[in-house]
Image (cartoon, rainbow, N blue to C red; front, side, top):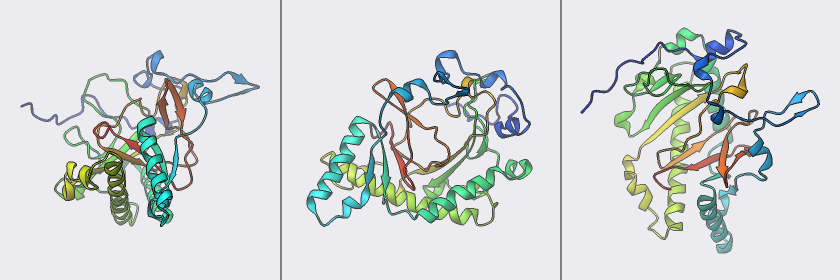
Length: 289
């Protein structure tokens, strides 16, 4: 068995530091091959749209599902909500949920906490720098391939569950109250995931707890990744996060409403997601798919 790598193959450069330095062009290692770059719409007047062509041509948005329908006293409403979840999973692999039980105030606090963290002085953030051994903490790249083409983003990765993987030394102390907010947010999101797993199990004709048990029952794994996308001087050459599928069971994404960027692929088109207010975007991962 190979030993876990201990060091990055090259010095780590924070994307935020590149952006803040005012560079007019991005370093070569962030430039994607032509087939992987965003393609932009035609110029309209003197402005250039930043919506990729495929997304501009594709109509619609991923489904938005009101989860309060699952608690309705009307059996028809409950059944219809279940049907929409099932159809969304089969047709899209993505959907948004509203009235999901997580407090909007808590969602806003979580976003604000991480916004403040990424604007801390560099030396404060570096106290939590990660390594290839666990990836947990403050990072700017994944993988240890030397000379790899990188994404234009920084991130923070944390294990939340099981408790045996939770490393308190990697949980930031700043800004104040950060740990308490992250912990409360994680607890509520895990509860929401468990509710969704029960719905998916029933829609598959399985016992309600089937998927929860398959993922470890009370020892289910949960982690948190926060992505930070600094301003880019040449957005047409790079991506904040390369195209991918999520390897786990389910991802719940809390987006910044001021910034649209997430795209999902359907029928050979990339469709830009329009986030609903205080909604979570649910991504069915490879394991459940």
